[in-house]
View (tube, one colour):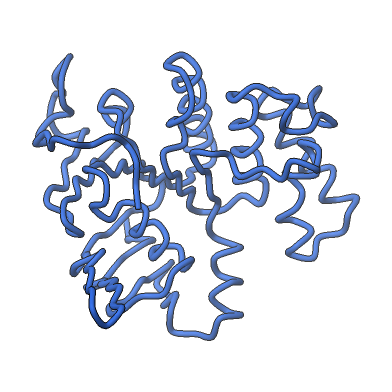
Length: 253
């Protein structure tokens, strides 16, 4: 299977002239089509920056990101935005729903921005809400929904255009344990049914054990790349092979 997402010596440096922060330091990683990959590490180690750079939300200081064999940063801003819009879906810890829009209006927004006709966008969005069990809540605004329901709406929004990659930045961070598992069950169902590649930042070792691989980050580098499918995982404690790093509160830059 060929790699569908690849980074080549990716660096991200923030330099104010007096302060230099190397947020990413020579990241080299390949993610195969349909893989599920968790990203772990202490606060400030570069997890969110990695997602932003891989998806083209943030510029690189050096290096390259390849999406389906094509350079993400080898084109102008318009082409990069097009590639990102077609290939990536995003799920955030704080849901990032627009409060004045209904659930279905939030879900259909990326389709309308891509130029889809309103009737077709509405139909696809209602189908996406049905897939996450919320079609009957389509006309409700975010504040009328529970936290778990709001995250389901954000999942529907991320999947509505059927992207190749879903990037999640602590998608269960604001949810209780039971709801967290329900949300992850939805993500893995989409992965199973559609072959969608998952790349998810999490501080939860129990959730991380469900992924094919775990990328352990520290100080802007990937210090471990562990396969959960090649060895038996322990019943308790850290995922197999992962070295615990103190001070991980689950928060990011």
